[in-house]
Each structure stands twice: as structure tokens, then as C-alpha cells.
Length: 348
Image (cartoon, rainbow, N blue to C red):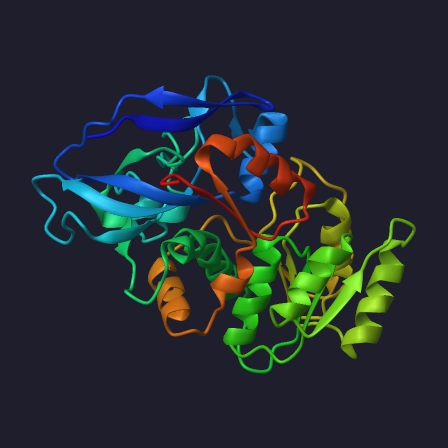
């Protein structure tokens, strides 16, 4: 078996490609030879600042949680997978015993071993071990790159499910990064009528339009929150029944609460600062539902099916490719916001 090469973050911007021991699996795990891994917005945040949400770097950590590869070894208790299977890695290993796991909400597990956190290494490495229950076979007509990009799609599906999107829903998405664009693609696949997406970067809006969004709005620095609201309503022709914050900025969250129609839903999937000043009372008086979507829940199978059946075009969503020895270049490009989805290949 070849050596294990890993992309390790030691601190903000301190990213190195290093040799690591090949992990030893237990009876419920599989060993995967990773083929490719996508770069996520949360990866960029922790790469740039050392923190993201509730996570902070306290010691070196292997990066990556959007992985796909080929199984090379299975544990004694594993019966649903075998060596040679191509799998998409759902990047969590929940405890299965806390009240949330027992109720089926494993995405908010009290003690999750989520890839590339202080509890578990990431999968941006040649060989990676994972619990077999959260490895999903990739359909024959789905590429390995698409298998890696299924992870953010599964997040978007969970977000749209939480938002209650259905036939005829008018949707506004704030932030045309990867998750925002995938939310727009998912919303359209779920029957949304009109979808408008906003961003401060023109190139992202151009990409979103090519991927099927109906309307775009370039938000300029000089716009007030009220001006953004007015422009959204003017373009959309109505107030949205669902608004999704996919960027995590307080300004976007304020706009979401202001623009959403009375009785509608604001869904927050973007990870922002710990605190924000928001027009909460006005939203409450109009019975606007404000909910969050954290990571993903029971949406991997749906994501793989949507890609396999060509309901979601992930090939066009993937824009840039890098070999593992140029991982830092890949992170720097992703940080600029000019790329939609960057994939790092470990077999090049």
C-alpha cells in the first residue's frame, strides 16, 4: 500500500502537504482511497481565520469534508460495502446515542465526529477511514468529482426541505456562493416558481444564471437594506414566501427578515458571526418563521439520485481542478470567490 499524503492546516494560512500514517479501521469502519475532495466555504473560513462557527484550530488538523473515493478495506462487521465500491463520504460520524441521534436528528448530535473538526480528521488525504453507515455508493453514471460535490448539494437539499419549498414557491437567496447556487438549483428542482439570487460579485451571478436561476441582483456597497429590499421586490414582482440566507452576513439576514412576506419563512444556512443586530420584532409581528439549517440530514441519497437522474447538473457547477501538491493554490483561488466549486485530486 502506498504512503498516505494529507493536507494539514497548522494555523491561519499555514497549510502544508505532509505524510501521515495510514489509519487503522475498526470492525464498523472502511478504509477509503480518496480520489477527490471539494473545497467548502467553511474550509476557506477556517483556513483564513482559524475559526468557523463553533470550531477553532487548537492543533494541526487534516482538512476536507467533501470527499469521494474507492473502498480498499472493510471492517469485520461491514456487510453493505466491499472493496472496489466507489463511495461518497457523508462527513459525519454521530454518536447514535444522544437524544438528538435517537430522535433521528443526527446532524445536531451532541458529540459528532464531523470531518475536519477537533473531533475528527478531514478526508483531504490519500487514505481515510470512516464509519461504513455514512458511506454511500456512487451510481455508475456519476463521476467521482460529482460524488465529492454531492456533499454541498445534500446541505442545500436539507436547507430547502427545512424551508418548505414546494410547487409555486417564490424564493430569494442571499449569497451566490456554492451553497447559495445549489440552493437555487435545488429549489427549482423542487418546483419553485421564481428564484432570485443576490451577491456582491458579478461573476458569481453570471455563473448562477447559467446554472438556472431566474433573476439576479448585484448588491452594491452603497445600497441600504431598504434599497436592496425594494430592488428585490421590483425584480421578482412580489415578496418572496421563502428567503434563504446563504452567506451569513448580518446585512443579508436583515434584508431576509424585511423582504419576506407576512407568514413566510426565513431560512439561515450561511454561517455568520456569533452575534448580529436584526429587525426581529417587526418580523415577529408579521409571523415570519425564522429557522436554521445545520449541515445535512438524510439527504445524501436524494442528492446522489438527483445527480444520477440529471435533475441537478453538478458537472457545470464544478469549475476548477487542482492536484494535491497544489492544495494551497486551490485554497487561495477558492478564497477569491471567483470559482464556484474547486476540486482537489489526490490521484494526480
